[in-house]
Image (cartoon, rainbow, N blue to C red; front, side, top):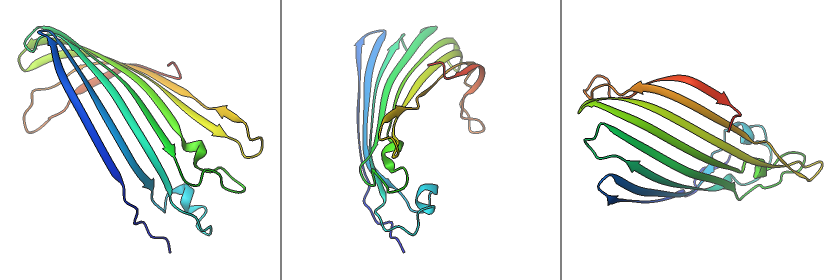
Length: 181
């Protein structure tokens, strides 16, 4: 029987600066180390093998920029982020793929335009694009091939008033283009 007793670590930091009355800049950094527990499809299929858990390290860096004063009728929010996940154990497995094919990088950009109708009501238009990079090593050819993908989406809507019954946003996805990024 395998024991799932590894220690996972998490570190996070962020800061925000008001660089001018209508300009706000910020960043977030998240660093984690963890593992995939036994019982997932990858570890379930190979239960007879004696090996360690799939341990990984991931990093996420994001930069935020907001244009617009808190009570102005128009504001613009932008966010760019980079995410990286790398596995450090079971890189190659005899007769199959190791964790190397799970390594990935994601670059994303999001922009939101807000029109403030009243202090509690505003409309928004949101655009998100992301690109995912996977590096895969084939055990047969030992070559690195790419299986990248991307997505772009545009949404429009409004966040309802914040009361106890519905504390979320209502967005209608008007356009979603897989593989477009």
